[in-house]
Length: 93
Image 1 (cartoon, rainbow, N blue to C red):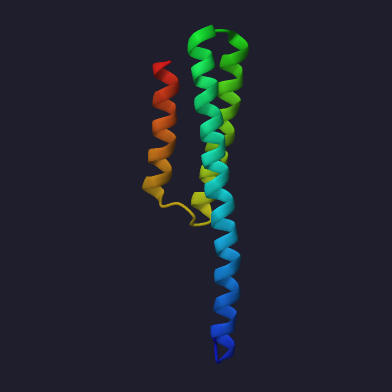
Image 2: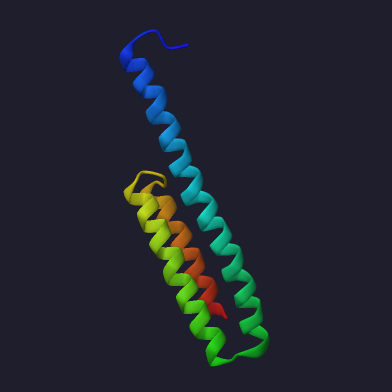
């Protein structure tokens, strides 16, 4: 256990950051899975409503990834790679 004030503070900060990291990472994973299932639906139907749904989903994923990068949850290249992969999947559909 921590013996001084700064070590106790670091424990609290680590817990806070851990919760924040888990929130962003799990949210991005969840939205990505939803995006991929919507993408499969769009490939079958090719309807405009599905395309709009994909665009909205992609923008919300981008937003979370960018916020995660800003809060040091993701490295710059990791965030860029995730966004690029999703954009390429949408473009290929």
